[in-house]
Length: 195
Image (cartoon, rainbow, N blue to C red; front, side, top):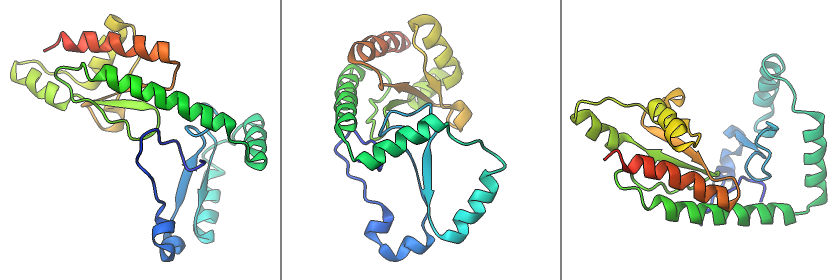
């Protein structure tokens, strides 16, 4: 499955499959970051009308560098071989980590349990918790929460603040099950003390 990793039962249907006439005005942007666990390689693709692709190439040539030759050859080999065993194993691992993570996150007391519908991240919505804190005279943003979780729980998270969401914190579950277990229980214990 090269259209991106989706560990939950939701099925994705590209717009060009549902409405073929939209193909002439549709851009498809995708990467192999999740489906092949190549997050650090920054390799993907853009498909669309030829005129737009030419314009994007002209812009991209002056703003970014090429993916490494190693990543390009590895991906080319994967695409040409049609081998899916690695992807299937990866999908099983991530699905198991998602299931375990959701079970652990169900212990959150004042933050809604995330659904994790794509990729391999849980996204915690702190907005209700922040409103409750604000009513008690305390202003806290996601960046501060991420810092406290790092210092108190020893777990690195990504704040949604740089992405325009000061009420979100992202936790990865793209790791082995033992680390998912340990890496989620610690921040939950910390967050549950902040009722």
